[in-house]
Length: 236
Length: 236
Image 1 (cartoon, chains in turn blue, cyan):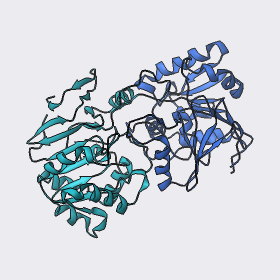
Image 2 (cartoon, helix red, strand yellow; image 1 turned 135 degrees about the vertical axis):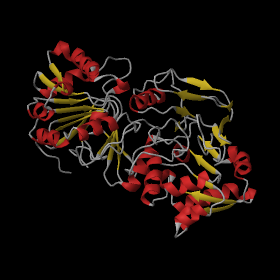
Image 3 (tube, helix red, strand yellow; image 1 turned 45 degrees about the vertical axis):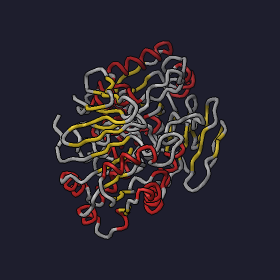
Image 4 (spheres, one colour; image 1 turned 180 degrees about the horizontal axis):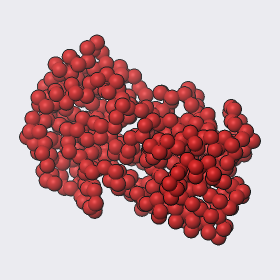
């Protein structure tokens, strides 16, 4: 599997784990990863419909003790230039359809790809991690808006399923399990899917992918049984 | 709320409830509702990726003791004529994106609307119930394929959320609850949403909507607190 060796990506399942504040469990790794005190925040996924300003303030607050200067992309009249000049980029979670639609509507996808290919560190949580894959076809979100395409940034040659959930053996609910949904995806799509449990993330550097956090991740390949990947370097 | 008085719709949350066979809990009502022994089945949502043939056989098997002749739409070379000549129509569940994409690709949406407006009984389960609403923007499914639009048949002046699930107060999972997802939907869409719990369905006749089954349904209106609707005639 070929990954551009220039990429520096942190592909995070969730911004928040149970019983802990926004970003707090990942903060040390986040700060060490971006290696700068300037962060461009992309608030377009708007979790629970909060405003860009509120969402950006949340990130500013979470990173204040690390002395990171966080600026929201929505605040720049020229957003392409803002991306071009960014020292590091963080795309927060929320609704993946809304995130992608906004990026297409503002014509920012290519600019993001270009900048990331220059090695600018990129952190994505949840919807922001879906964005690094080939498509948003394995998002868990509700399709509240219609984007111009489901094609994502395509930095990774697979898809991400964030907030991955194992089937509940006691459930009486007849909605599909996550695993069945991903199997349905593979009826129509070739790329592998990595299910990242809450608390897990991928660190991509030097063309290598490392699974971080306390859990294994679940790898789904078309036509093969799913397997568990252990933390550490991933080869597949 | 104006509903075309010619419509005969059965809008069903799920084909199957826990501990019971496919369609069995709803079979008596289904058969009484369609008032014919000829059923055109639309298998395009392909649950778990099963073939059209397998899915149609499942419906034939479930309705065999009621002597209903079930034919799959996929078997007709001219699908528009098949819809035009249908005595009753059943659109089964599975993946809503796949269902809608297939109907758009085959250019069958208008034909379905025309036929339903003539009073031909329509039964939809899960994805097939999403289809009766204004859009598929409140489906729970994974976007495994990209349809030409999210616009659904628009028979009802609201959206359906099938398999509606109440928040689990003991959950430690940070994915959005169903209610939060629907609130996000209302940031960008005006139409009300009815959350139908598994075991519930709407019967639409004479321009009236009746909630059937043992449960209340949850009505979400933009800018208002959600309310529970009791079984029986719905006024809103």
